[in-house]
Amino acid sequence: MGKVVLVVDDEKAIVKGLKYSLMQDGFEVDEAYDGEEALFKLENYEYDAVLLDLMLPKLSGMEVCQSVREFSNVPIIMLTAKGDDMDKILGFENGADDYITKPFNVLEVKARLKAIIRRNAGIAEAKKTDEIRNGAFCFDLRNRRLLIMGSEVNLTQREYEILELLVTSPGKVYSRSDLVREIWGDGDAGDERSVDVYIRRIREKIEENPGSPRYLQTKWGLGYYYNGQA
Image 1 (cartoon, rainbow, N blue to C red):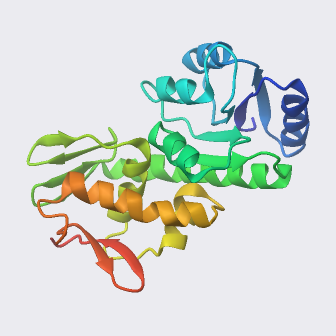
Image 2 (cartoon, helix red, strand yellow):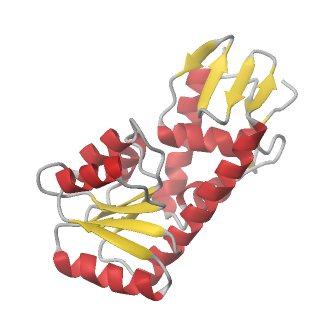
């Protein structure tokens, strides 16, 4: 059985076009045309990924994304006519995994879908490790949470994914472009600029002194890495 994708857009021509193209690559495709229908299906059926339009009737794509993150970690790619960096950051803050601006190339959509499904499967496999401990730092992979000195740290979906990538590869340096490719897929310059924002926010949440980080460190001129020996 192929991977099952939910395509959500109020423009039927876009849904039908994506469905036809995805089915050519072996995907099974379900459809929804407004936010309420999308949320109902996501609450009641299992999907490997979601293509979710931002501007929807009844519930916006952002509202759907927020609600879904209360009960599911299904990969979500936002489809939108908006291209502003702030819209992207808001989407990521509300739990989106990737962001494609209309008009889009369907080949890019398929490539991003395949990449995000592969990555999600890899994370599920890595969760068999259960926990990564480093002094007072405890990264719970199975339950997708971080504890420091026994207290849970409130991370957004995007913050968690960046930290997860770094923590599961201690000492490995990731450049901004590496992080964009691994986390966002084929991102643009705006995505690279937002990496520093996310790193700063993570440090503010996990470091006793964010200006002199213990766990999430910088290799000057190269990128960021997790210090597994902190």
